[in-house]
Image (tube, rainbow, N blue to C red; front, top):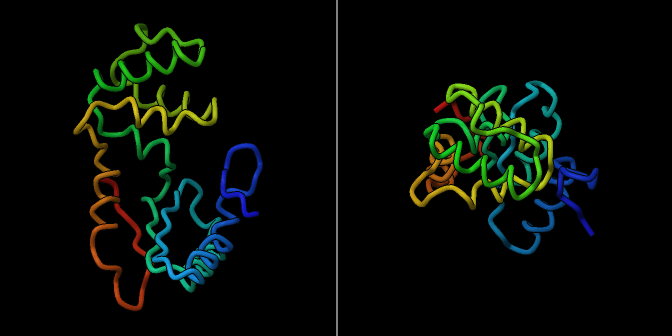
Length: 157
C-alpha cells in the first residue's frame, strides 16, 4: 500500500515517486502538482519525478496549496465559505469580525489548522468561482506536456 496523504504523517509528497512509478507501469499518463512553499527543499524529489512523470506542475515560489485555492476570490465568496466551514467544523472564528483584506490569510490559517478541509472549501465555492492559480493549473493540464522537459513552474496569477 502506498499512502499519499500529507495529513496524519502518512507519507505525503515523498510517496509521489512510488505512485508515479506504479501509475506509469500501468500505462497511465502521470501528472503531478507540487506546492512550492519552501523553495529548495524538493530538488531531489523533482529530479526523480521528472524521470517518472509526463508533467510536473510546480506552484509559484512560496505558494502552498492553501493559497492556491484561496487567493483571487472575492471577499464575499471567502467570507461565506469560511463561515460555513467555521460553523460546521468548530474552528472558533468570528468570521463577521474579519476585515475583507484579511480574509485570504484567515482562510489559509483555517485550512492549515484543521486538516481535511481543503476539498470541503473547494466544494463550497459557488459555480464558476475558480481561483486564478487553479485556473492556470487546469489550463496547463489541458495543454500537451513540453517535449523533453516535464517540469512547468507557474508564476503568480
